Image (cartoon, rainbow, N blue to C red):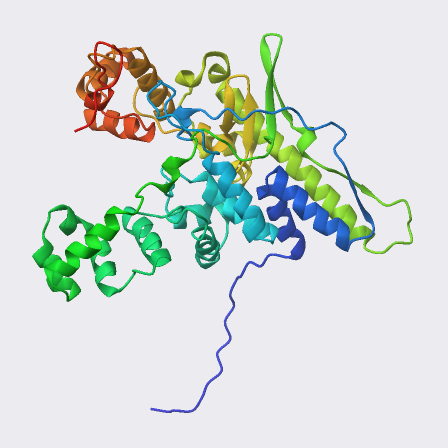
Length: 427
């Protein structure tokens, strides 16, 4: 067989993003704050680009996040009193000081959106990075910075990671401690012998580390006042106009752009292209917001109990856009309505059967618990039966338990009150 080298010619297809397309994607995905920062940097670097302050003064906007969307605990009178600052406001203050580039702050906002009231992440990092259109490694680098925010344990992906972050801060994250945290199920079962063998220490060493673990906070976000929102204005505003609704851009949150009058300045072409891209971004954001809320107009009229199932693919098909475009637009986009401030992404909800959305079910579950007799609270099975009868579809008890957990509502025995109206003490 001949071993002589041969040349082989093949053809391949490859997509590449030019600078203009990359910029368009960045502006499309940015919220009002991220876009403002990006434009400020662009105006500083381009003398032909003039950044104008918003023509409207900032509104007196009070964030009112809605628990059925999973952003706050249930407003049923069951949550503990809290005078501490909001978790999200606390985190956003640190984001502004720790992350300097617009891109890293944009990624950080994606993680903030996924932050649960417990302080843990509610979504996998891979899903967050996919929504943001960034590499997994880039997202993990931002997550490392976010996990340095005090109190330690915030942005953890699991209980084990939450405790490990606190162990590292305390300087007790040795190999045996890592083994213990990797096998919390053994610890819960009290299987100290098995842990000791795996960790290479005696049972006394396991017990000593258990005492340290008991001093950690498994839910570092719970110390903050829940329901607080990012310190920023929403991107969209929904207002009632006669018998209908008007969806508009929040102009008080957006800067204006124009070309400098001096035609001798360079980079006029780049400035003109950026102005067109921002105009396109605003138009696309408004189109998507209007389509989403047009499909959910009953929720604006009646509340979240009227939210219907909705998929991004359906919205994209209706507007003639790609589904990824809709995903980029709604990421980090908030809309302020008379019924509360909602993340646009969270208005997309799966069909739980019979045309009932998961968000609507959570809202109705919250209503049932708010109206129950505090001395004889409803069990999860009773709540499932009541929801099934009201919705005309079978709702499983485990579904009720899951939604109750998302709403941060305790089980029936913890909600039971004495005749004087006080809750029974635990234990």
